[in-house]
Length: 464
Image 1 (cartoon, rainbow, N blue to C red):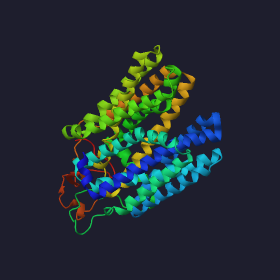
Image 2 (image 1 turned 60 degrees about the vertical axis):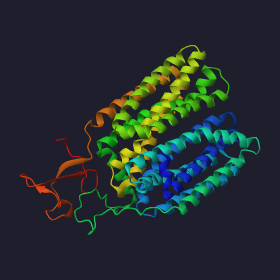
Image 3 (image 1 turned 90 degrees about the horizontal axis):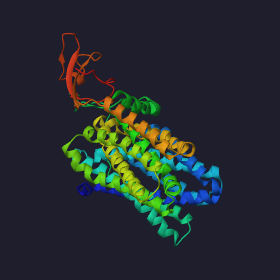
């Protein structure tokens, strides 16, 4: 897996991702303490609103940013977003009002919503080999998992020496370091959207025509997902993961403190079990995906999630004890592992389904649509737990995860080749894209190649 770090460009990009994640982790801890200072007992409501604002920023900003990524130099966009995040983090220690917290969170997450899809779209062009890209996806997953374990520990150590406001300074340093690393990397040029004279055959996907403005190109990302069967399935898989992950991120503190009556440190232990499961899966996935396809890994993992949530309902309905506590930790670890097994190969599915020129729009759409799922499940997990109790919450989320996993199974064809035979009815006979096509008795042109949605192929062909 570590062999991909021999690539200088990827090494700089990955290091930039890591230092930015550490900075974000420090900001998460500091923001919670800031909310408590500003709002006191209402800090939970402040943070809940901030989390919703984060998801809204991701859902609304990412598609537009993805469209812009195809029109402006990517390095300039990535550096600009890092500098924006550094500036916002530097302003956080001076916040004194709740509305200021919400405004700064929106600005910070809006910049992240522009940075992350652009970064994701760049990696497969830096590492074009399938094996290298798979390793990079696992490395990225490991970075997120290790950050979730490392940043709180680092914050705890720093807080013994300095006030929490200095954690925002650490966040600023992290984003500035990320910007410097991006500047030092030689990024590949964005691929051309149109076939050129040097490629008269035109049988490979060439992407959309980036001439309709940012909003039109942003809409293309959503249309790409809706028109491609495996990408429709990916949306359903994201919903299954969000249903299971929401109970972990929203309700763990309630489960640990109210049901099991354990100390605050046990909350970190439960979240650590989730992170450990996710990390273990990320380590095992490259070898597993080299032997079996994405569908064979992602669908069984998604189908395991409602089973684990049903078990969580039984655990939280039973009397608290050592055995139940151990079962909860095991359930959280399985949710982490299954979620990682779904999310990590997702980038491979997006890359496989998209022309190189359209990768920014595709990853932006995936980023936005997947966070729409979390925007649904986060409040569902919180409101249900408060009103109906933990067992009912787990069962409702289990039903959501089951419906989503079954929908993904139905949407993703078992036989799903990259190359598809199809016909063209609206291109002239001398069009470069038809150079290797043959006429049909119906007067159309037929050929086969790697099939993705683009301006020559606006619809998915019907199965033969």
